[in-house]
Length: 110
Image 1 (tube, helix red, strand yellow):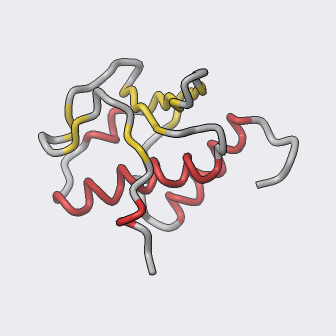
Image 2 (cartoon, rainbow, N blue to C red):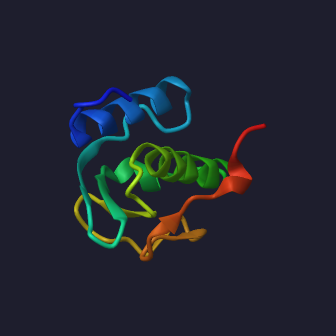
């Protein structure tokens, strides 16, 4: 990423690239983000994050965002999702989202 780019602009670029790669739904929107002093990057996204998906797709979609943001925001140690401004318990009963998610190197492509 270019130096001097705002965090919001960097986040929008990440989302655009993930959409172009079809890693996240095209309708998924990022409303705002904030990096806490504890290294947790809070992402407030649209409800499309928790739409119906196959289990493997759900994991890959979620960690495409988590891994991309942790790689791009070097002070971020984990990502906490908020959906339409609210904490959510789970994503379709599979991923527990009340706690921040850490980088998952097992999902990296070879």
